[in-house]
Image (cartoon, rainbow, N blue to C red; front, side, top):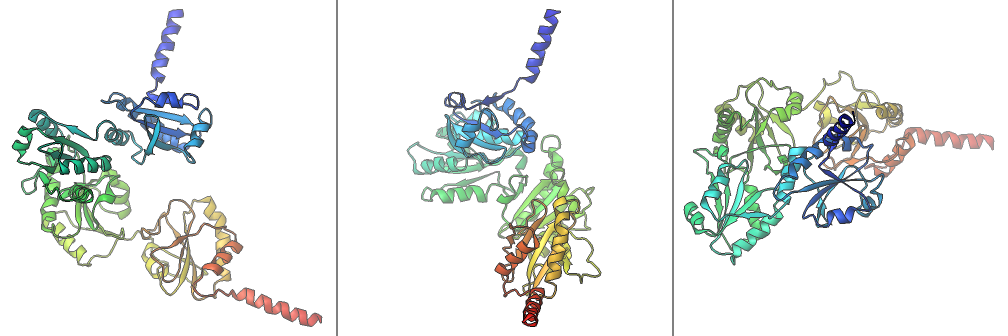
Amino acid sequence: MWFSCLFSVAVLSLATASDVLDLTDSDFESKTKDQDIMLIEFFAPWCGHCKRLAPEYETAATSLIKYDPPVALAKVDCTEGGKEICGKHGVSGYPTLKIFRNGKFSKDYDGPRESSGIVSYMKKQAGPVSREYTSLEKFQARLASLEDNLIVGLFTEQDNELHKKFAKSAGNKREDFDFAHSFAPEILEHYKHKDAIVIFRPPHLHAKFEESSLAFANAEENVYNIERFMDDNQFGLVGQMRGNNEAKFIKPVIIAYYNIDWKRNLKGTRYWRNRVARVAKKFKEQTMSFAIANKAEHSKEIDDWKLDANQDVLVAAKNEKGEVFLLQDEVFSVANLEKFTNDFLAGKIKPYTKSEPIPEKNDGPVKVVVGDTFKDIVLDESKDVLIEMYAPWCGHCKSLEPKWNELAEKLKDVKDIVIAKMDSTANGAPPYFPVSGFPTIYWAPMGNKLAPQKYQGGREVTDLIEFLKKEATNPLEIPEEKSGKKKSKKAEKEEL
């Protein structure tokens, strides 16, 4: 019986063992000072975001502890044993993640919050920025196993100006790219590059009409231009757009969405990319980019756009403003993609707008805005507009509604101010009107429609009126207040 209980306890201990280190004020310094690099999560047990992160963080810790060199992941409970250290490092929200090197704060973690992303990000932070290769065989094996670009410095000697700039650039861009370098004559001779920085693309991105490597060999250029070379050429003709790299694509960008699986369906995945690349090749001289993206990762967008997800390939374009343009009712082909790209660049396609039907009547004090009328009402340069972006299920929005109606009633005779509302769950707005919670209120005055001000003040009618008096383009006089003042003076005379 005793053995059975002991065995059960041992099994339970193994089951609950964690590869994430627990740190407190008393042991924080001693447990971090000898770690070359450590990712630390500052959390609160009651925090919902922390709870969602926990299993991803645990999985990443288990993977990274086996990495060479190992990368430790730790956590600090800011509500209990870590209050002092959380205060020292200015933790004001949860979870906050920070990278430490040898016990000293290095930088805030700004990478993905899922396990594979954490692993990838921290691997780039650990160890040397660039790995040196002395053997052609080992270098070729590395190239054959690439899943993403490898940026390689090939130099005839260490005391080399381009090598120094490469090392500096690699340090600056270690979060964005993988780096390697070599001084080995057999490697330089095999690849016919000397004193050059070369982008080697992974095998699955090789195509007959696209270079599998690209070299930069001007030692006179500065670090900034070397980094521009990396950024501008990182995707080749067609890059893969993922959740954390969309901002890196040059806008406008043409995106083809399909089922991407380089490991289990290399032939099919490459087939569709090559067709996009045939079109991209014709637009190489344009300041724009082409991308492929996994339909599953972008299912919400595709659903919002009401595209037929059963089609093999779906196509969208995004411009510098973030507006979306869709290839609709067309089966994907190289010819259709080329025509769509030309029409998009020529301004012949209208941007997609998520919208409810336009209201048949809209003559109430509060103007109802839908996606298709946003431009006509909110972006009308002849009006100042205060708009509430709401959700029908939002309790705070329901509490605001009678106050919003009262405000609109008071201002219904003010010709140059519009009080509006829009259901943001059913309608889209331009990207410069972002909504992260409900209700969100924006002030879009005349002459400043592209940079609206988010209203942060009180939500009583008096608060809103005071804001409008201060911010309105033209002096605000509320008819009700004026008539109220006249009555008051008349009453005073009668009393006399």
